[in-house]
Length: 96
Image (cartoon, rainbow, N blue to C red; front, side, top):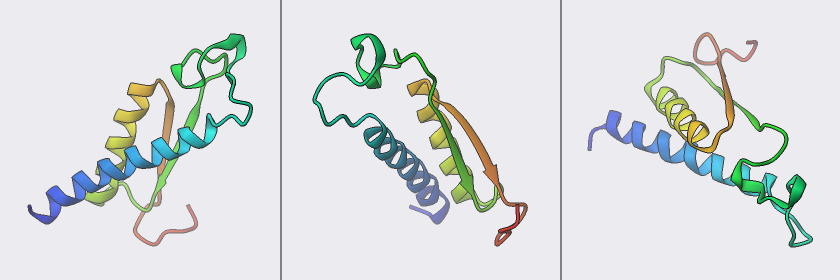
């Protein structure tokens, strides 16, 4: 497996894993009941409010971060989540 393929796969896996952790944390409920209004399941997309996630990467030209953003977008679309992305203008750009 070449480095580019590895980066794309790792980026997709990292994005999905990050999304899964985020959603698990957001939908956790200590009472054991439903946390969504009207008794619907929290993860079903039936909640009254919409969920938004922002992914911030170092650059939008590095293949690793491009693959990460692509995987995050695919996951967000599948889960009905509004995804916004942002990136620095160049590697190491902390101001933007």
